[in-house]
Length: 246
Ligand SMILES: Nc1ncnc2c1ncn2[C@@H]1O[C@H](COP(=O)(O)OP(=O)(O)OP(=O)(O)O)[C@@H](O)[C@H]1O
Image 1 (cartoon, helix red, strand yellow):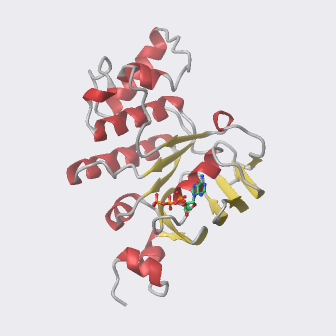
Image 2: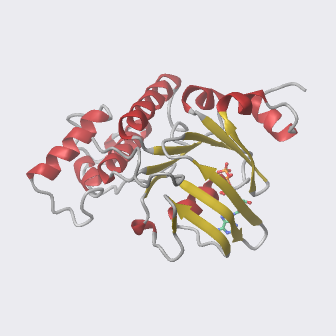
């Protein structure tokens, strides 16, 4: 089991300082500090910038100015593959023509030259996410929730200390949501990984996060420990998300 609890003593897992993205219609500016091992719910209205924030951290979205630091290192000029980050998108994480086993194996070796020890790691990861015996199947024969768990198994074998999950619960029914949350909590605890997950559901925030951020209009309007986050009353957009009648 990888242990990511302290990859660079002292430095936060992620530090953004005015990391700025300029789209044609919109400017997004992110500043925040996320401690190592945190499990952060990323919330905010549709179009507020949640996925863009993930792409900035993972390196898929270049920034025009500001800085992105991961474990104290400036990520400027570093490609996504060179960052200690795994990202799981809402959909289309898997290659349809590859088996489940091969999709997970890509996390170990992109050219899929896997020896016996690597195959055992793949098997172990599949077992860990509850998909023992599914290795030979193609993704088309899996449910949406199972496909998400294959993506999680791949992230698990990639063993990067930061895991970004874009709406990991969206395709799941209520029972599977609870299972997925439990699985993420266990993985976070066992590996010391820093987890950020986007959700539109207050229930997921309550169930899993130890802190939460609220993004509004392209900036991080709030980032707080879960207790005080849930107690906020004064921001109309957040109150709306929290379902509070003011
Ligand atoms: N490649 C792009 N080019 C131009 N504008 C973009 C691009 N990507 C995102 N945007 C705009 O930036 C804003 C933030 O988008 P983003 O996808 O980050 O929001 P979000 O909070 O993840 O939304 P949702 O909850 O609906 O997924 C939106 O107004 C979106 O239209």
